[in-house]
Image 1: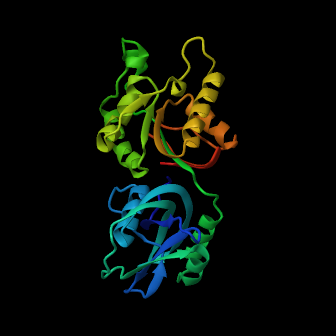
Image 2: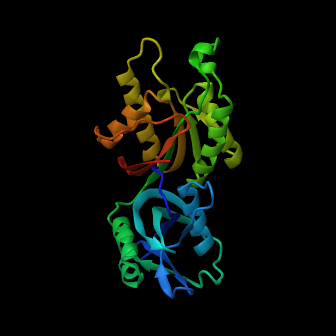
Length: 292
């Protein structure tokens, strides 16, 4: 994400299914006398996605799984430019809301009713973008392995090359992002550095790591195009199973696999080591690929 000056904040459109259709969560702030989407300022050094999930939880007691990045809004606050980043979030649990000084009421409403109630035009824009989305059926946290030194200085087989200190720091940082999607499965390419990249998430979530060679870079004698298609097919298979999953793969296959799934050849899907993507699927269609 590009650097932004001024005030940074993040929040979400938390939603849940109901007999009457999708409902979204709004909060009432007594200080301003407004109805708005739950949001709040980033803590120093905090990732916007982490802040978004945290703020939705703190303001509305909703535990949300982030799915699709929605339009950011920009306005001036306290004499400074302010940017608020939003994600759609599936509400998977609630903690039992208690009225407080910052938020004294929470309402779950149909989207049309929510649009009529919110106090600000920019909230209307975010809700309209959410309403235009097809139902998300699967969320995939897709990451590239962390830094693992230089291939030329490693004397063993390349598949055994481990993470270095920088790579382990990246793995621990990624674990916090992976945990946000509440994956039911962790799936890794077979090289040691890929498995190690998911190790901190596995410990945090108490999940095993499944090994899948379809996520590997091509071996000698294999064509890159063939392995890219194998990676894309495996990601689609995992998505079609529904729910949430986290995957670690390698840099040579990720751009092509994402290009194939998205159908967007003009987008830069290059993924740095220790970087990743939040993928949202509607059945067998990739809806969104947002950088983590």
